[in-house]
Every structure is written in C-alpha cells, then in structure tokens.
Length: 394
Image (cartoon, rainbow, N blue to C red; front, side):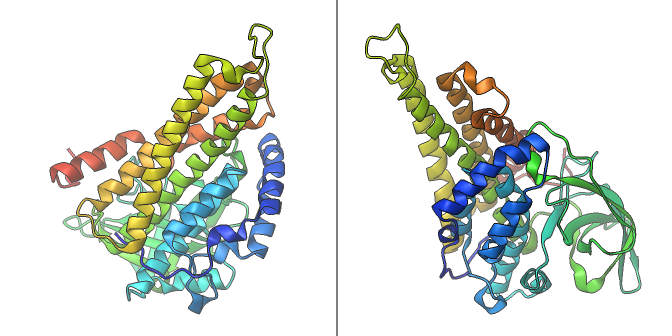
C-alpha cells in the first residue's frame, strides 16, 4: 500500500495566504445558505489545485501523497467542506498516479479524464452496507462489452459538478465467486439520476447528493477491477483507500488547527473582572485546556505526517493497512477533542449561529462517518493485527 510518485511542485504552495483567506471568508456563507463552494472551486481550479496529483506527463504537478495531505490540511483550516469534497477527486487521481508510477496502467483512464477536465466523485456509500467499497448493495450484471449497474449511492460529494463517479456493485452471477465490480459512470450516461437532497448538520458546502443508477451500462474501458467480495488486498483498493483516509484525517485536523488558533486568540484577548491580570490566558484551567489541545494537535500532526511520509517513501511496514486506518481514526478523534476544548475556552459566544467556531464544531463531527466509522475501523485494525481474515466477517 504505497504511493511512490516524484514531487516537484508542492501542492501547498498553490494555496497562498490571499487565496486561503478568500476561501475562509466564503465558508460561512456556503454553510448558512447550504450552497456549493462554486467560487472556491473556480479559484482552486484556476491555480491548478485539482491537477496537483497528476503526473507531469498528464499535465499535473506530480505532487506526492504527503504533499497533498499537507495542502488539504491547510485548505481545511479555512474551508473544511471545500477540502473534504475535493479529497474525493484527489484521492482518485492520487491513487491512479501511484499505480501508474509502479507500472500499473490499468486506471490511467482516470488520469486522462482528469487531465481533460473531468471532476471525479466517490460513489461508495450505501444504505444497508456498513462495509463500503468491499461489499455492495448495488448490483452489477455482466453483459457484452461491460456491466449494467443498478443501485443508490449516498453522500456523493461534489454533487453539482462531478462529471465522473467511481462506484462499486456486486456481481453475483457466480454464487460460488461473488465479486465486487469497481467502475466509473459518467454523469451524462443514460439512467444516471443525481438527486439534490443535501441538508445536514455539517460539511454543508460539500453538497453530497445521492445518485441513483437505474440500469446504467458501463463499458469495460471504464471498469477498474472485478475483485472477490470483501477482499482488501488488491493494489487498486490499497492505493485509493490510503490516499482517501489520510486526506480525510488531514481535513479534520485542519479544521482543528483553526479551532486551536481561535481558542488561543480568545484566551489572550478575553478579559474578566474577576481576574486581576485581566485576560483568560491567566486562568489555570484555560491554560490546562490549551496545553491539552496543543498536545493532542502535536500528537495528531506527528501521526498523520509520519504515516503519509512513510507511505510516500515506499517504506514497507508489514502492518501498513492497519496503520492507515488507525491514523485516520485517531487523528479524527483528536481533532474532535481539540474542537470540543476550544468551545470551552471560547465560551458561550461560540454557540452563536454564524460564528466560525460554531461551524467548525459541526463540521468536525462529520469525521466520525467519513470513509469508515469507529466500529469498522476497529474491526479492520483488530483483524489485521490478529491475522483474522476479513471474510467471513464473524
């Protein structure tokens, strides 16, 4: 599970201070109006941010995973929903670039599509399936030249703009060998129905619509894999999931970075008539909260950065898959703890609708659901450490 492509242009360098502040200034309005981040997308696309993970040969910057993780964390410190939605496109392009660098050209069609301007979304979440990607409630029927796919996909970030979506569906044609087909539908394929129903607690600007696939034909040239159901060992799954989960961790840690900044700013400026030295920075419990936040942030940052750099460097840890899942899970948990303490430090004003910290508090709680939840992460890590096969499940 390695990402080993060369990096020349650092993705984070595309995010100058002025761009970051413009994204921050718009984030509250997107959240309030439950609106897609159209202006952010235009600016980020103009500076080449959507192409950072593409190899140089495809017109991209050739940025590696560690670099993309750093950039996503910086973007999320200003606009968490923008960064989260773009992680879907970036994990597909980054994963495909990783395979390409290793000599596997099976998903080069994703690199070609992205270079041509396609925006790629993720269509793996399904009601009734708590093992996304590895299993599926959608159906794939083999036909001449490809598959016909039927099902409903949830939480499709980039809902208003995606042009291509990665989906998975179960091919049960051989009951002795059920397989999960990984394919890419186009928005303009017949029988693709994108449904605008997004109205959630947090990450509202992602506009993560449902997509109904009502017997969609996908040609073989857009089929990435047909894998045994429940099997996580294929390099395609490894490259995509590694890129995704580490970016998810980066997004929520970026949100926590900003919450920490807001808490420090509040503690060093907020006063009380009951404190002789005036600012709340002199309150011992505020000091303790800031210290805990700093420690959690340092721990999460070290864990995320080390894992991303090891993967990028191609260091072959025998427990690499478990490390990736553990990193995402722990980083998100620490991010939520940081934001929770920030609320204590800032106080009751952080409850007011429209304040930045109130929005961050709602955004960061969504991290418990992205990719895998705590139950599935624990199952995957425990089985990996114990050497228990993922299937049969129990």
